[in-house]
Structure formats: C-alpha cells, structure tokens
Image (tube, rainbow, N blue to C red; front, side, top):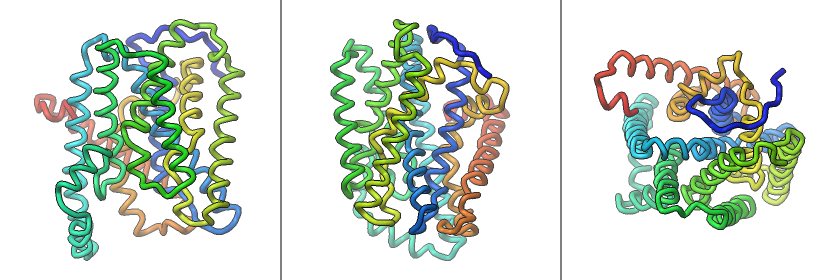
Length: 354
C-alpha cells in the first residue's frame, strides 16, 4: 500500500502516479469511443453512466499539461512543445487521410467517402471549423491536439504577460460550466462544447493552479486524503446523476451521451490531487511506463484498430465489452513500434518532433 506523503515541489523527475493517470486516461478514451452498450434496460443505463465517467480523460490530460507548464515555460520549452504538437497533428491528419481512403476502398464504400466529402461543404467552411472549433471532419478525436496547441499558446501568453490570476481562472471556469450545461441539457453540436476555449484553457489553468497550490500549501486542507476522496465521490455522483437525468429526459438513445458532464473536470482535478498526494502509486507496475512513453500515441492511433474491429464486434452487442481492451492493446503495440522506428532513425528531424 502506498503511503501518503505531503505534496512537494515538482522537480525534473516525473511523478509515477501522474504517469499512471496518463495511462488510465488513455484507456478511458478508448472505452469512451468503443466501449458502450445500448440497451433499454439497467445494463444500458449503467453503460451510459460509465461512458459519462470516461469523459474525465481529456480534461485530465489538459490538467496534467497545465500542471507541468510552469516547468516547461521556465526552461524555455514552450516553442518546442508547440512545434511537437503541430508536427504530431500534421502526422495524424495525413495518417488518417490515408487510412480513410484505404479503408473505404477495401470495404467497397469509396463512393460513400466521396459523398461525405461533398456533403461537408467548401474548403473555407472546413477551415473555419478547424481553426475556430478545432474540429477535423471524419477524424473526430484529433480536436484534442488542435485545442492543446491553442491552449499552450494561451498559457504562454498568461505567463509571459503575467496575466495569471484567480479572476482569470474564474472566468474560464464559468465558460466551461456554461459549455457543460449546454452539453448536458441540449443538442448543442459537439464542436461548440469541446474546444480550446471551453475545455483546453480552463483545464490547463486548473492544472496550473494545482501546481501553485501544492507548492505553497504543503499542508493545505485540499491536500488532505479525506478531502480528496470526498471530492472524488462527489464528482462521480454528479456525473452519474446528470447522465441519468439526461437519459430520463431524452430517452434511451445513443445521443444521450454528452461531451462534458459538469462533474468530469472536478473528478479529473481530484484524481490529479490524489496522484500528487501519493506520488508512488503505480511505481512497481508497467502503467507509468505506458503513460509516460506511449499514452499520446495510443490516443492518436486507437481509432484505426477501433474502426477495423467494429466490423467484427458489433458495437451494440455485449461482445463490445471486449473491444476497449483489444483496441487499447493493439494501439499500445502500434505505439511501441512507432517509438522503436523513431529510435532507429534518430537523425531524421521530423521523427524527433513527432
């Protein structure tokens, strides 16, 4: 059992517990996209409630980035971080463009892909969705990378011009709460509630605040294990209750899931505080290694095995409960292979940036 230790100043050494959280968050993203069961009974309702809980994953990734941002800024690594995100995003877009064409061709539905491209409208409209709402047509999960680029640049501006303050955090928390309410109680399009303004910047600011708090309040009440566990319990309750209320309001349909439950950012923050309080969590397991080295690539790659497996394991079948584990395992293998390819060609600068 891991002993509780007072939070300390973040050093150049990464926390085992935070890297473990990154691994768990990567798995939850896979569960989010490929793990729900739709039935009009208790099992279906439970699956939707769990689906809502998995939505803590992306806020958690943003918060972890915000937590380490001060170190990134002080070391002058923000420019490098933005370049790496840009290269990774470009790589992912090209990868999925090739995959989409190949997959539709192999399955004999290339005409469907062409029709979808025509339906999405002119290039100017697509660019608008890309740059304003971080939405990449047909590659739904890549919005996170685009939002991260915008959010990191915003965080740099807050640090550089000394705009970092509690009122700034409060403003973006209100923005995120408004988006969460829109997401939970209306049919607002996803891009309006999941972008750099509504999730990226607010969650990075929360991570930045947690860094500041644990640095200056080593014995603060928020670092108490009992308070942290109470926060986790309260956040889980909020997420589940909000999801069940939405199901009751809208009926048992796939659209009953939503992108930003009110309690999800609170749950992510509580888990980050827990990881800081117990920094050795996961130390003797493979989870921190996966989190530190492969979680980002798992996020990028997982839609490829997920799309392929969907043709073999029907998404509405109870066998779909196996899908997240299979997709995660295959994505991890893909990530390991990619990292080894990068290591084999260290002189290729583009590889180093991806």
